[in-house]
Amino acid sequence: GGGGIWDFELPADGSDDLDHVPDDAPVGSRWRPRSFEPPPPEAPLTKSIIDIFLEAGSTEEALKRLPKCIFNLKDKMTFKRFKEVTEDIKPGVHWGIPFPHNFQLLREAGAAWLTKALHRAGTLPKDNCVLSVEVYELSTDSCAAESMGGQGMKGWLQVAYSKPHPKLHTELFVKLPFPYSPQNERAKNSYHGMPDESEVLANRLFGPCFPFKTPKYYFGDISYETSNYILISEKLEYKTTAWADGGKNMELKAFEVEPRIVKFKDYEMPQDGREHYAACMRAQGRLVGTYHSGGLGEKSLLQGLIPVGKVSDLEGAGWDKVRAGIASKGGFFGWMAQQSGAPKDQVCAHFDKLNSDALSLAHAFGKLAIDFVFGCPKIFPEVTQDKSYLRRWWRESMEVAWYSEEISAYITIDPNFRSLVHGNLAADNAWYWRDEKGQLQCGLLDFGGFGPTNIATTQLMSWTMAEPEMLKDHWLELADAFLDGVRESNGPSSITREEYLTSLGIAFAKVSALCGGSTLQLLKIMPMEQWAQAKDRWDPVVNDRFLNRNYTCAIRTGMLVWKYCNLYDRFLQWRRENAWLFENKKPFVCPDFPEILR
Image 1 (cartoon, rainbow, N blue to C red):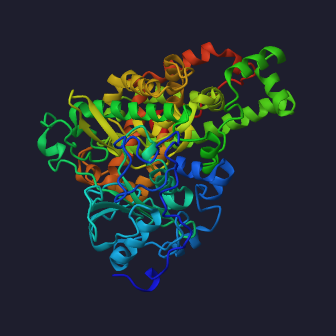
Image 2: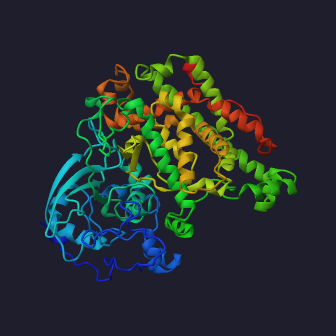
């Protein structure tokens, strides 16, 4: 196969040379923790972030060799231009070679292109080559009956090598972007945001350094000219009997990989996924501990690679500095004025403006949520059957939104509450097996959104997709699993149970009304009249289509977790214990109730 655009020579820059880390290097990052042994030369790993740093000798030099995240394309081109270029073939920013971005192109590129790609990434020795490649499609339409996700198409490759080796996988998983459609999430994932860039980056640079298993990376790249990307990695051998078919009590052998979890069908799993979420939270905690203990490399390098800005003026200030400043300047706003150089009344007005904007957004999205659930009440009976609760939810969630800036400031003051994290750790973004003691273990997948984030707010993208009743019963258990992981990896002592639970509760409370944002995508898929015809949550038009199931689950959980997990009580306790934040706080005025709740 191949020809035309796929006929190119690899740059002769030594990028495929893996013999660059000295034997006495302090971190054997290329193979930890996969087997705790160096990979065989016949099946090498690509250079990790630590390898590149050791080779470069400094953060500045390492950053010159790596692409920095840009987070979106809307700052580079118009939306019209974006739609025009999504079918173009351009070189990627990681390896500088053109790559196929759909299955037809992948077939055309064939074994010759795959050989060059693996040579370029350093995952196939130069004296070996791909003889043949067969392409199989698994999921090609996120709006179809049983899509495997909304971020990209999935497939796998059957590969034959000229020099086979047990550690060279012959079955490879491949992920590609969906073609643009107004109904799918391509614009969200490739123009307004760009989680695919961090997924490629995480798999390429961090896989061997993570304190948990990840599929072996073979090749991946993304183009900032088109937003197209490709990710090729080890294909996992899931048990072929699905949870829905084998039942929640299905017997599995030690170290047998469990069935693939169908996204947002946690109810098919044992205990609605309780153990699985706990395993993921332990892994997330270990990632936080590893980041802060230096196991992922120099923080300055990581921050330069994924340059995420602060979400609050106080982010990373540290509690000692904040407390000393408040004591010396006669209050919080006096100290903030001294820090910023602005008059105190101007600082107060700035906070008021940010909170007013947050309340306006909560008002708009909360109304969308209310209108949608009452527009198709059979999908949400546990929500719509109690209007008195929804009136309380409305009033309380709006009040919390009025404190958004204070919440953002509080949860970000401790610099240790910011870490590299998996940005979307629902139970389906991992794979599972039990060890010889019966303990559930997991490896992590789907690193879209990977980057530096607050460790409380990151759970919003993880727990919101869980069954609300599971969260009701196991909220504290999941938080403790995360904290156990932090301690296992020698994480910071300032991440205490008390501070973490406080931050977790107010972070969830702050965004509760924003679950209504999900209705915007749902109404792109179908008009309200069609949603109103759904018989219940289990109607095939709702539950058998990935995006429909995804966003309706997010609304359901977002509106029920408020009462199930006592979010308003957690907010009130935080407010009582931190009066220093509210010295000039204007009274809260509740926006008008949506008409159906009056």
